[in-house]
Amino acid sequence: MKKRLQGIIIGVLVCAVLFSVSVLAAGNSKMIEAFYTGIRLFVDGGEYIPTDANGKVVEPFIYNGTTYLPVRAVANAFGKDVIWDGANQTVYLGKKDQNQPDAYLSNLMYTDYREGASGSWLGIINGNVQDYNGKTYTSGLIMGLQSAYNSDPWCEIDYPLNCQYEKLTGTIVLPKSYTISSGSGNPRVRETSVSICDVDTGSELFRINGVVETLPYKFEINVKGVNKITVKVNTAAHNENACVALTDLALYE
Image (cartoon, rainbow, N blue to C red; front, top):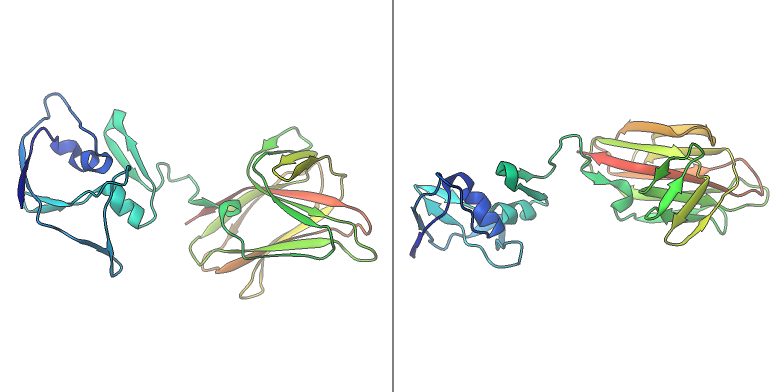
C-alpha cells in the first residue's frame, strides 16, 4: 500500500517517527513520498511489533530505496534507552554520556542472601546514608551485622552479572546514620571488612580490611567475563553489632 506523507522533515525523519510528534523546521520542510509495504521486524528470530511511546503500533516504511525503522521501538527491542534532544535535533541511544554507568548493582535482582548470625540484615539504600565526614549517599547497599556468640558476624549477597559488564566501581563507608525503607539508625563504630568474589572461580576480586569511620574507600574492579559475584561483609568484633554501606555501585559494559 502506498501513502503520501506531507510536511515531514528529512533531517529529523526518524526522530519524528520515533516520538510520533509533528516537527516543523523553517527552511528544511519538504514533501516526500513514502511506501508502506507491510514490513515486519524480527529480533533474534522472534517477531517484534514496533510501537511508539504511547504503545501505538508504528509501521516501518521505505523512502528512496531506504527502509526507515522507528528508533524508539528498535532501541527498546535491544534494551537501550532513547533520549531525544530537541534543542540540538539529536537522538541518543543508550547512554548520553560515555562516562555514565550502564547499570547500578543495587538495582539488579540478587539471587541469594546469607547471614552468619541471626539478625544480620541487608537494606537497599533508597533513603540516605551519611558518613563521618558529613557526606550523604543515596544509592547502594547497607549491610548490618548482628552480634554473634563466640563467632565473627558476617553476611553476604550474590548478584548475577551474566558476563555483561567489564568494570564495577563504588565507595565503601561506615555510616554515622542512615535512613532506608526498612528503618533508620545510628550504628556503633566497628572495624569491618568487605570482599567481592567471583562465584564460579572462587577467586577474590577485591578485599579491604579495616574499614573505619575516617575512611570512605573508593574502589574499581575488573569484572570482565564474570558471571556472578558475592559481596561479603564481616567483622571480628564478637558480640558486637556493625554496619557498613557500599554506595554508588556503578557497572560499566
